[in-house]
Image (spheres, rainbow, N blue to C red):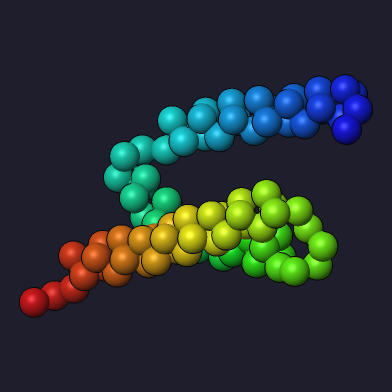
Length: 95
């Protein structure tokens, strides 16, 4: 990997981190939980990428292990997001 590509990737990481931090800070606390629990379903995309990274198509051993770790963490994120959403929706049901 060339130094130019590394600088470009680092620039994208810093910009995405700053933008994400600013966007999260602008959301009022009453909307934070519903938005975050719903957006955890986006981790399903991470699951697909992790499955591709951990398959047997000649990738390195490191990418297989990182893919497996990403698969486990993304699955936990998706299940937790749905659990939080379900719990939140139960609060609004009439008894």
